[in-house]
Length: 252
Image (cartoon, rainbow, N blue to C red; front, side):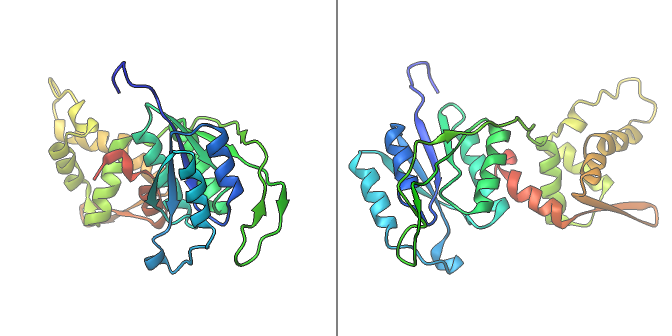
């Protein structure tokens, strides 16, 4: 962003079974843009409530631009990863995340995404809880409350990159991971000064273990099995979920 650009106020809003709790904080907060998170309805088999049209109309009446981003708002890792990716891409702007308008798992994923990226989470209390098949679950909305957050360090991109490579090619030997690190210029390879080292190849294995494999193993994201003289690395279910949440750190 150049010195002449003004940061925008961008609201990230899961499009759940709400109306007032979506519209009021966007309008009262003078939002410049709203990014709606909505499942792919054809794929997910989720019905779109009739009042979603009223949500968009009321926001468009205020001349606020909107965009829809596909996200499974009922899945923790889809919610976390989508919100974190948006906040990361818009880190030069003021990003606000509505934790009241989606599902409970969207709220959890959104809060974690805010802790990782620095986006601002808020919660909107309803005036009344009622709802029905064709009505929002709540009506009326009080002023949004900004929630406290505690910073969480983003995963190291080289670990996410290795995790993605292992998931694609598994099982993968550690030697193959070193070759992958060389091809991609990953830090555990690039920052290794081999000058004067008697056995640099052994050093690459030590660095791979210390900087990548051991931390991933300790967190339960990969498993290492030994067959003959080779050690094979595979991704666990937890590792796949972690990758879903933080794949944005390595792009496509």
